[in-house]
Length: 188
Image (cartoon, rainbow, N blue to C red):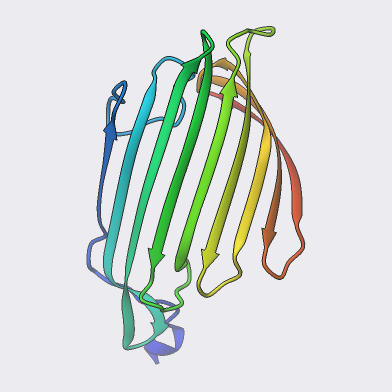
């Protein structure tokens, strides 16, 4: 029986996606944008993205639904006090599976907020950028989750060379809080 192995709906319909970003201050060139310009640009941007795919949700044969997602986000990055860089970022997301539980897809609402501050004064070969972030996911068919993160980046050469040290606490309803410390190196 083909339906006995059926774990989720499938569809030959395309995933349709559209997005836009409007920059009030400096332009962000190209299709891919960056969430940090390390003071090279002053950014005030608002963007939105939408997605839709027909017939991809559900696990019961003959009962399928559509997937849709929507997000809106904002980014502000500005030089302050002569050369320090203040960054504020936030986003809100909505995911809809037509109220059908589907492996790999989640229905609910989510948001995050982030603030960072890069000091203009070099210490050694780089600049320190303390950062704090909060994320929340209100899931319809699974435990809600939230995460706080705080730490610092050490910016040596923008995205090409940086170090990170971040402490975070993750909490999912019904579970204990998970604490972790992450140290990272980014080289391009």
